[in-house]
Image (cartoon, rainbow, N blue to C red; front, top):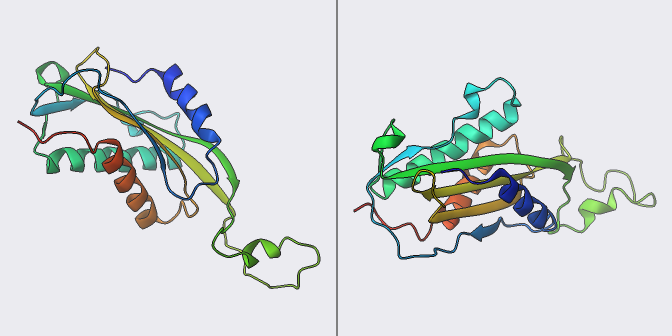
Amino acid sequence: MRIPFAGLMAALLALAGLAGCSSAQVEKIQPRSAPVAFSTYAWGTEALSATSESSAQLVELDAELRQVVGALMAARGYRQLDNRANADMVVDYQVAIIEEEFAGDPQNESWDAQFDSNAPSNVVELPTRTGAPRVILGVGIGPENGAPIWGGRATKLITRPEDKAERQRILDRAVAEILENLPPAR
């Protein structure tokens, strides 16, 4: 099972307009049939650390997303298998950084005043990093070579990408929301 790349790109473009929102924007798969009981899964996506073409930031996000999804699956009683042929379901995921953009602080109006030519100097101290990556992640769970039954996509502007605790919190929340309808293992 693979989440079609063209489908992910269409969702990325649709979600890109939601840039200024402070919480993750989540789009879930609507199940077409009754949930299927299962107890084992295998990864359908190879970790980016196995390729040499990806940026270090993307590899790190990929590893963190894989860890978060694996922890959620384990917490719900699912067992991971190495062989997809022996697994009940396949878990595919994708993570992408689609752009860098300026991040302001909507809670602090004076934050943007520092960019006004008439503003007094040192109104607000500039952060060390003013670019913030927009991260889009997708997770799909379903039979191998079949459509996903559970999953979805989330997009989030990470204002402090160097803060591992913030990334972890964001990924935990997004994955929990994407897979909130995933039943416990049978």
